[in-house]
Length: 57
Image 1: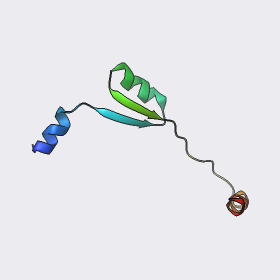
Image 2: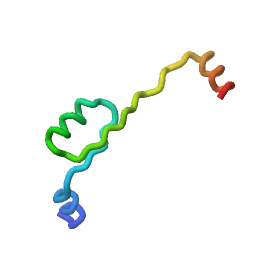
Image 3: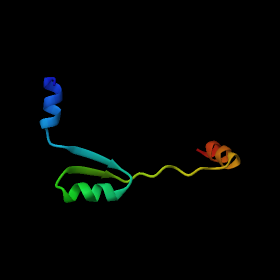
């Protein structure tokens, strides 16, 4: 094992959770440093709606 690998395994776990809060909650209960990012994929638009939206933006 390299020194870098050893440092990584010996350090405290820090997590960035994107999406499902159930994972965030489970980590918090275990006193793990975690940050929750509230993210959802954008809506899927039909071709006409995409063209109209791209023209006005």
